[in-house]
Each structure stands twice: as C-alpha cells, then as structure tokens.
Image (cartoon, rainbow, N blue to C red):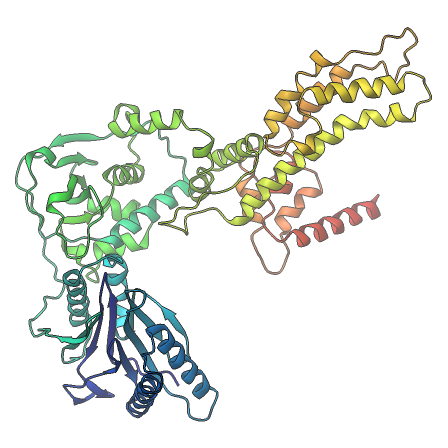
Length: 606
C-alpha cells in the first residue's frame, strides 16, 4: 500500500543551504490529531531527514535509521556523508519491501557535504527509489508545488530567494488545499549545522477572483494560442507574404499590476481587429527573472494586442481557449486585460495574425522585414533546424523541399536539439531516413558509373585495357571517385566534381577501337549525374502519416501505391518511388517483409 499523501513535505537546495519544510498537522483521515507535529529527524550534525507516511512506520523507521547512523559515527569516529546515508536508507527500504513488514514511508534527506562543500537533497519513496535532486516534494506538495519550483528554482539561489520560493509554495497550498495543514516547520541545513527557521504562516492568502479590469500572467492562454496556430497551419495554407499590423504608441498609464515603465520603453499597441474588447499585454524582459523579482528594471518591451474575445472563441479551433475565455473555471474569462509575462511580442504578433487571417502587407511590417531578411540569408546550419516547424505545421511542400535539400547538400544529416525544449524535434526515424536516402544515392551513383564497365570487361578487344584505365583514371582525377570514399562531401559536391570528367578523359589513340570502348563516355557520366540529381524528391508528410503504427490492416493505404505504381496517389504533392520508400515510418523489417509479400503476389499474378 502506498504511503499516505495527506502531509506536506518540501525540500529546496540553494547555493550553500538546503531547506526542509513540513506541515505541522498530524492527520488520520479527515481528523487532525496534532497541530504541532515535527516530521523531521536530525541524523547527524549535517544531515536532516523529513518523513511522511503511516504514523507507526514513520516513527519506527526514523528511530531505526537515526540509531544506526549515530552508531556508525561513534564506531568510526566520522560522520556518514549525505550520499552514503541515502544509500543506507534506500537499502533498508528495499530489504523491508521484500519482507512481510515493508515500511510505507516517503522521505526527503537534506544534508551538507563538508568534503565537497555543497548542499544535497535526496528524494526517496516507499518503493526504495532514490534520486539526488535540486528540489523535491512529497504528499500534497507534489501536486501543487512542483510547477512553481520548476519555474523559479536555479542552483545559485540565495537563502532569501529560497525562502521566497517556499512562501510561494505555501501560498499556493493555502489556495488549493481544502484542509488546514496547520502551518509549516522549516529547518535549514548549512555547513554550520542544522537550525530551525522561524516561519510565520498565519496570514490569509487571496484566492483567484474574477475582476473585469485586472491582469494575470497566463501560461495556459499562451500555450492554447500556440496549439491553435498549429491546428490552423494543419488545415489551411497561411499566406505569410500578406499579413499586416496596425500599431500606435500608448501614452497613458498602464492598467496593470506592473509599475509604469520609463518613457524609453513606452508600451506599443497593436490593433489586430476593430471592435476590440480584450487586451493581451505582453511583457518582454532583458533576461530571465529570478525567484521573487518584480522585473521592473529588466523590462525590454511592453506590447498591448487589442483583439476581439468572441472572434478568438469562434475561430481558435481550440477547446482550451474557449474554456479560458468563456467559463468561470479560469480567471481569464472575466478579465479585459490578460498579462503574458516573459514572452516574445513578435511571436505573439505572428500567432494572432495567423488566427485572424490578416491579408494586407506583411513585408511592410517590422516583423515581416526581419523575417524576410533572415530567411533569405539562411545557410545549411539553419536549414537543419527547419524540418521540425514544417512537420509541426503540416507544411508538406516545405517539408518535401527541405528534406530534399538536406539529403543532397549534407555530408551527414544530424539534428541539433534545443536544450531548453528537448521535446521540440522531429522523430528520430526522420533523421535516420534522410541519412539512409543520402547513402542510397551514393550507392546508385557508383553503380551507374561502373555498369558500362561490365560490357567492356567481357569484350575480347585489344583496346579494353587502355579504355578501362583511361576511364577510371579520369574519374579519379575529378576527385569524385571512388564515390564511397567521399564521406566528407555531400552528394551535390560529388556530382560537381564528376562534372569535370570531360577535362580529364580522352579515348586511347587507336584507329581500330571497338564499339564498346568507343562509346560516348562523357554522356555516361553526365547521364548518371542527371539521374541522381533528379532521383529523390524529399520526404512526403502524407506517406509518413500513412505509415504510423496502426492496428488491423498493416499500412494498407501506403502499400496500395504498389499496385498501380502511382507513388504519390492521395498525396498533396507529386513525388517518385524513392520518396515513397524513404517516407516509411514503421520498422524496417516490417517494410521489407511487406514489400517482399507484395512482390511475390505480383509474380504469381503474372
């Protein structure tokens, strides 16, 4: 049985400290048995353990661990370090878990490693899972506080910033929890030892309310706008060459909880639509805000977007936006100003104009000029980043073009993932398919350049030795042969080298040269290059979609292309067999098995 989750246990590490905070209420069901319960146990001078779980188990296990850690210190005249203590606790929980008397206990182990001079925090649960973490929570806190900790915590926070983050967490618990957890006991572990920190937690906290002229920072609204934009691109082709923005300067005092900025960063107003009744206020900062900062001295730009609430509801194609703006489940429903902190105004501008289908003068806008200039100067490094937005926006022509470009112009295709957003990338199978297509082009090029040699080598003429030598020497002199040894060159670079073949080749000086040896070798090389450069059209999003993992009929709509050999049937773009083959997103062995099955069926029919 899992350890009970009705307690609150929080841990936060900082630059030179670790904070442990635990609720004072000892509860059984809905009954509060004690209002001053201390859920922490000091194990040594620099190690503090916080526990939550069944009452009997927590007391027994805490005393057992405390006694053994102190016994180790007395026997060896040295304290266990926090990491070793966490390992001991995890081992004991694992042993108990496999016995008839498991402990239903969850723990946070706070410590200070005096050897490495750094604070530590270990998260341990009743299943003997253990992890060293920068912050952690057990009980109700893990439902309501982890998002706050994730947003505001960083490794170098000061003690004051750590206490501010803790205050934000306890305020959130007060707003959300239907029970009174009787306040918090807060203890701090530093290099000087363990101390209890006075923490006043009796002030009331205001719950979210619905005021028509108040402001809020809404990550829900921003994420919903982005989702709406993705759906819009999936169903319509946005003409990004014809978007317009009407802007004017706003000189009046801002109606928001942010102080009025200096004149140098006066807010800019963007009117997306007439008849406005909703303002989205976007505040951009020069650098990310730390915990507890108001950001008044870091404001880079403030932009007010005037929109129509009902139009967003009717055209957003997003249930999230509709609920945010129309139901009382969210505060945004009753507000005329929604504040979006730490967002990029240009990105919000593009999203809103896409939703509103503005069709006037995109290139004349500041954003349009900047995007156009940057797009024209894209290099290979930038193009490697383009498959993801084309894939996410379901822009099939763009995806076909960029995948073809990467296959022909890259020595090796690899994706640079965004460390801040590791989830924003194309499926790994796409990168694998691109490199496979690039390798296949090299194999075909080498084969087509070598095939004419088969007839020459089988001939009985006296000129074949000189012809073969001259042909291979000329290919080698182009620096594009052997093709399989040009690993640092792209397919197009190899083709450009081979185009100089005419400068290096000449037929053997003989009046009796045979037909095989006297063929037009310049045409052989030029034809191979032309065939390769037109062989692969890129990857098709429609074919990729047909071959996602399915049940019942195995990729029937994909393999039906084999029968009439219409490789782009039911696709939005025209392409050949190579694109169809490379766009298979299932397992390679499944593709080969199904392909073999279809070919066998064709042979039987003939």
